[in-house]
Amino acid sequence: MESLGNKLRTAREGKGYTYDKVGDDIHIATRYLKALEAEEYAGFPGEPYLLGFLKNYGEYLGLDTQELLSLYKAKRRQEEPVPVEHLLPPAAPRVSPWLLVRVLICLALLGALGAGVYFFLTRPQAAPGSVMIREPESYVLNTGTLERRFYLGDLVQIDYDDEEYPLELTSLGDAVTITTPYGPVILDLSQEVVMDLNSDGMEELRIVAVDFDKYRQDVGALLRFELDNTLPLAARSVPEPAGADLRSSTPPLPNPSTTGLANATPIFASPNAYPFTLQVSFLGYCMFRWEILSERDRRGRNERYFQKADDINIQAQNGVRIWASNAAAVKLQAIGGGRTVPLELGSAGEVVVADVRWVRDDEYRYRLVLVRLE
Image (cartoon, rainbow, N blue to C red; front, top):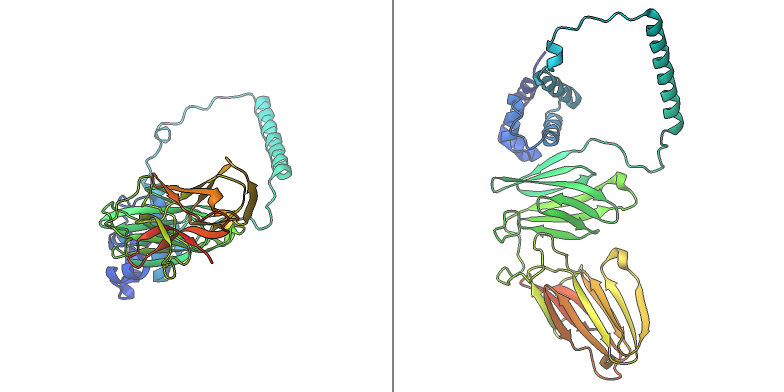
């Protein structure tokens, strides 16, 4: 029977493909393609990667992937050491009375029958719309963009600067959770994060949650991975504020341009947006409303009458819209990145509507600003 490596090599050479062409087409490093054809598996980061690469390579060459997986598993079984007990001579059988043998056989049959009935009666019923069962797939990205639909357990290996960074889709519900070597990255719909893979101060990888349905895990999540060491950084010369994590930062509002915000009051400046707290203290009687911006699970308006000495803390990732019936009765402070900045809302008796939100300027610097709305 033809070996696994020979099948791959024969198919590739028959099509006239080089390792470089195959690697560019299916985003698999040439060293892994050569290792598959040589049947040398020690250099793979793990068996899930190996199986994913083998399946992708086989499909690309037009081979039967199930046959390739069977050849791989058969070879692995042949390479496994024989248990010591199989090498020892069999022990001499102990003669048992026939009556005892018959009793044991009957008890075993009755036990098996009872276990079968119990399993049939208590087996869980499949819920409508349950998540489909599938083998996790593995992909490799070493340059450019990879955009496709991912499912739970799917892996993406980022090859950059002679290092490998495995990323896995580990949760899909109200948000998408991707486990990375630096910790989990959580994305809401249409949100993105940028990552500095090798801690050189440059953000080489961008991840975008293009589309997913938190009620339909079976349809997976459409994710885009962009690997490029020329991504525009947001004011690299600006020092990182204390408490801000540049590896998985909170994205800005959908329209981060500062156009039309000439009268905005700057609060913080940072290479990346990050969560902040708006601390509100009341110096007198006031009707006050607030609404969290661009957070899908925190929609809705809050409204209360407040009296002197009342206070509230509003936590947000992207922005907050506030209404005050008496601006002078409201004392505001923005807290984030280890700093606290007082804000001036307006004068006595003035009705004010304002946003405190992240924007991005023409130099890709993120700014938290207070902007009054007319």
